[in-house]
Length: 381
Image (cartoon, rainbow, N blue to C red; front, side, top):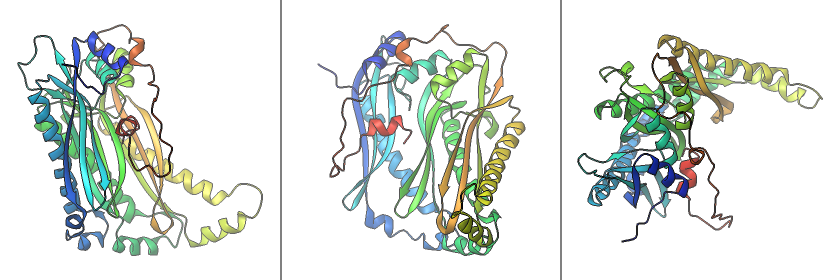
């Protein structure tokens, strides 16, 4: 019978080089009523800001239901693995659907082990395997959080003067790291010693935000057996980036995060407002933004030094406008270390592993409410 797969021609070519052939597209879902979510007693927690544990738990359960159903469908179809797995939230009228989808793959003579699953598409999976990382399981770590009314009042008092708002910096720092700790814990439970290809998304959800990290729990023979938090490697590099670094003898150690929340302050805000009518630099804003970024980068440097890294690569910075004129600066990178004897299987990547895919369906209608999950996956959603 004909197969129906989400794999592209480039992905199929790369997987064939690793002895895999495409199988069917598989789907898992779980639908929750919005009224049920709204009825959760989270109001007390949101008064002080930070994680809303009840919502975190509901989203985790919804995502896990969808993922488990996808795995069951893959086993039913005799798959040896599932590639390109995603974990999405889709808003329907009055309901929320947790949706997971991926494409099965098969190996010649396979079927002796439980199927693996990975967030990597076919091209990324080639890079991952060639770098020595063998996929075990698609994993995620999430945290739902609120800025909070109580935290907002504290922040308002602090924001009268210019500078960092430690009440918020601390809350957001802990919140961001919860997601990382949880994805590492899932990998440890799966007997993996690394999580690679981690993608981080911040998604609005029922008046709050969810930060979710998805990646692939994997095993590499050069890494330690998972026993403690420090033993599970976490990497925010793309699998192509990781392949290139492994080729040079570097291994990822830890995804590192820096968070800094700053307020312009009343006095500086007035001065900047007046200066904005004049030609030239707004020096107060320039200094503020520079200090905030420097503070977040310093946190990343300290984390890298603590884990014995040689470098931090793939660093990206993000800026978020929060309520009350607060600004969050988020820095994400991957700490790496030189490891003797580590290299890739192949001398170079095939062109099909690095070529960009061409979009062949574009919907620009304003009335369209559908979401292209493949495009969202490519953007890290």
